[in-house]
Length: 273
Length: 313
Image (tube, rainbow over all chains, first blue to last red; front, side, top):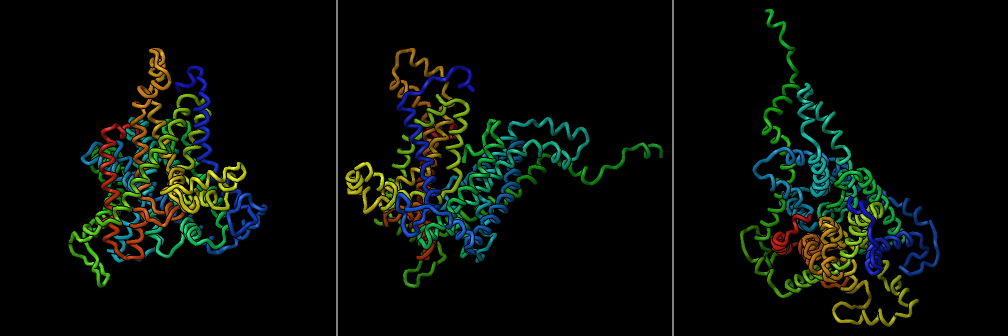
């Protein structure tokens, strides 16, 4: 908190302008998506929109293909998040307490699926499925998503572990609690918010993922895959805009929640992806 | 007899199990590690290895069937002129995006660390983090609206009587094109927009470790802003910039969605991979092509490590 210890100096106008421009560059484009979702024009992207209407929201809501894609996305994101929460926590616990041969390799292995471009993860899984003659299913999508979601939970939980003290666990065991009780009453409350924040971010990541999914989904459509198809071959542009607004809302909420959950700690969730 | 009655009640099976685990940390470690290792080690690494393995298979030119025999034929085909073009185009774009991202990210990061109040800083942090995590495809899509011929950029240029400027830019060789959404310039803008947050956060992290007193000392010793930046701030922030560049470079190398939606018809590396494994059915070639970004990134990471980027992650 160096900045609060003394009065902060004022930034020069050039620096302020550059910083403002970068922030605007990051956020103004999304505003256009929201604006176009209300446009009465359905054939082009003409600016300014000739008129505003809310009717596309109704149209999008009625579309069975969109509802199916949404359902699949929510299911995949939920299951992948749960798998990632279990595996990420286990890996974090192992790396936290022990020094063992290959410990660095574990950290690398966990980070690799997100450090390498998504297309490599995607095509690897696809080729492995091909070699094993495994058909595409709900579970092939989940396998891909959970793989790159583990690191998110792992990072958050490990950061929290590193700041908690092992003495509490020893005290709990000394006082006669068994492993399950210690986990339930000591360990879990300690890591709860970090675990939840990691889970939220993993959910947003999975709900939004398109690159790996194109390789492991086969004919199934998650919401991002549905959008991608519409972008390549547009059919009803305003409906796509409405879905885009919807995706923004569904991914923003868990990210804001994760931020809120960890804002008072030193490791803010999501500071590293 | 008396001794037996004084003995503590036999602890339950569960309790004994947890004591055993507590007393044998190696056993506990094994239990903790097995599930994630099975998942990442077998499913993920197994897939990666199977991909590498397939790059040594080759496709029979007459039947179009993949021959599962060890051969370097696919790698020989990799070094053709058209593939070299694709690699050069992609690496060039990745380098341009990385440089531009650093130029845009640095002022914002510096402002966040040096001048923003605690509250503003938290808000700015959130403003950088939200686009990092959310709606990748939607954010790509927004540029289709913006760059469309009838869209906001054209409208704005007309309102400001700058239509000639827009046309001039589009008429430029290489980066220009029929419209912004079908030019390299458009692809570049979208890449920059999408990966920029990945550059900002590591620079913020690096700048936060620069003591304020160092900047003040530099000023006290008579350096102007420019000299302070060049001799003090930049060398200390460099690991952060390099760390950010790992992301912007690697992500640009592997992306195949953005150039497909905004850009020319000339393929990027990711698109070439996608086509080879999809419509062409040439999985060995697709596999060999993915080895290219892996090799580039391994080399890049080795250089980044020397520059201290891993401490800034």
